[in-house]
Length: 271
Image (cartoon, rainbow, N blue to C red):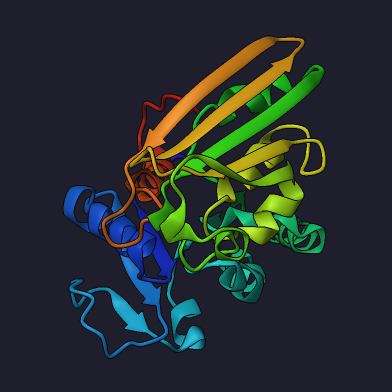
């Protein structure tokens, strides 16, 4: 990672995550991060961003902008639709990490990044400890397990509705028990964490995942257990869900901005 005095970014999607990334960048780090453009479905909406940021539904106009990094914040389809083109222009931060559970998608994006000397960047997003898990892969890792719990409100509009009557759940209820590969594809908006964990560690098929609907909690909770040659990790995270979209937490956008800041900071911690 070469340090730059300032970076120019583009954002695909101005929903909960994308708008927060834009707002943090413009309001707190304007001297280091310039938001050049945003690619959206409906450009007539009032996104309450400065006129200096091009907001367009025209992908050609978006990619014509001079950008160092492009942030995806629009879902799995956006990764598949725009990922290759993004990496031909700039480095590419993927928020919808579950899209990379599809081996052909990951292979194509990695090959494009290598060919065009850009980077495919996976943020920590809703979880932590990825730096240590990546380091642990230098030696043998015996076990990686993820247990995700979210309140019923976070599961509406997902595969969970096919498993249980969400409004009637009165106790923690297991709705999935299997591999990270299966979970990332079944719960694309809500279990992107399993994909990030798998990419950092021992792969999608070797990472075990349990998913619960839990009416006893108000925060999205992830417990990570890793065992291997270098030691053991047991990490519990409780993320405050976004008021605009309870499927995601505020920390996801914060994590992306942290990655952006690393490109401009002379002093970096936690790489």
